[in-house]
Amino acid sequence: MKSKSKKSIHVLIACGGTGGHLFPGIAVGEVLSARGHEVTLLISEKKIDSIAASGHKDLRFEKMPFLAMPKPWSPKMIGFLTGLWKGMSQCRKIIREKDVSVVLGMGGFTSFAPLYAGKKEECRTLIHESNAIPGKANKLNARYADTVLCGLDACQEFFPKHGDVRVVGTPVRSSMRTTSKDDPYEFFKLDKTKKTLLIMGGSQGARGVNRVVGMTLEQFERMGIQVLHIAGPTDYEEVRDVYAKHPTLPQHVAAFCHRMDMAYRVADLAIARSGASSMSELAYFGVPSLLVPYPFAADDHQTRNAEVFAKEGAARLLTEKEINADVLADAVRDILMNPKKSDEMKRAANKIAVRNSAEKIADLIVKGS
Ligand SMILES: CC(=O)N[C@H]1[C@@H](OP(=O)(O)OP(=O)(O)OC[C@H]2O[C@@H](n3ccc(=O)[nH]c3=O)[C@H](O)[C@@H]2O)O[C@H](CO)[C@@H](O)[C@@H]1O
Image (cartoon, rainbow, N blue to C red; front, top):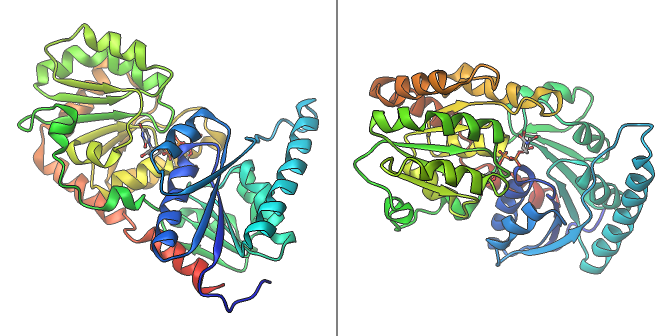
């Protein structure tokens, strides 16, 4: 393994492919940079990566092709393997040129080439798995990782043979954690005196949730609440047009929000997918939630994630199959109009939060180098 004597190290963080890998990667990158270390974040060529990176001009990003594992005998396998090979050469070049000594993979097959290249170049290698059950990519990545970091306790049991597994939480970006003086209600042009329902579907929106919410707006209006809806870039126009038919419902509809800290600060309740990063942020800001797992997520990992929060009393789990306008309106009313319940959920959410997750990971990266 590379020299341990240097004060400042260069860390390569592979976090491309989806917001759930990218934002925790950025969170670790922010802490390392603030401590004077060099950081390069590898992202993919997907649009969501560029949108997300555009809000972090102070960090250094490099692009590499997005890789998703096809079915074993699919003709796409040739392209996948070629992509892996090219990715590995690109990463080995970056590692040598920048004198990288640690590689951190945040999940997905896009992390595989950097991690494997890191191993070949004698870097220390770590992976982070934020979900309650690991994805295929991270199960494979774990073979090349000196340390496996888990976001949730429940995940540890999936790495029984690995000698160094630690539970560290899932990092929340430090830019979200610094207390802002800006008034979040003014930011979204919302009313301070009303209860606010936040609707979000992870980094790319949630069509199933967007559609049912659209049918529930009349009931929300009758409850006297206001809605902040982050629809995702794909559904934005459709969602905006549905809200336009309810002009007396106080509302803010956005395609993507670069200030999620503001969104969590106004939220009294969230309806959300159960992606791991969204959940770690809901916990950090103590926002009670109705979690609707994405039904097609690999190995149904979003349901497993949501179960962790539901068990602790921080959230209620609703399946996409069971939700309709009445179910959703009842669930919202039951929490928003019941201060005792909503306070208990808030406290439970806060209790789950690992506040210094990014610092813990940065410590493990730096101390072991
Ligand atoms: C369909 C699917 O398989 N999704 C997975 C993907 O989710 P996905 O990429 O949607 O990620 P998460 O829900 O975990 O996180 C979304 C992230 O995007 C940020 N954000 C979102 C919307 C917005 O307008 N602005 C913004 O900044 C949130 O603050 C959060 O940091 O990766 C996660 C982490 O492996 C998994 O748990 C999810 O199951």
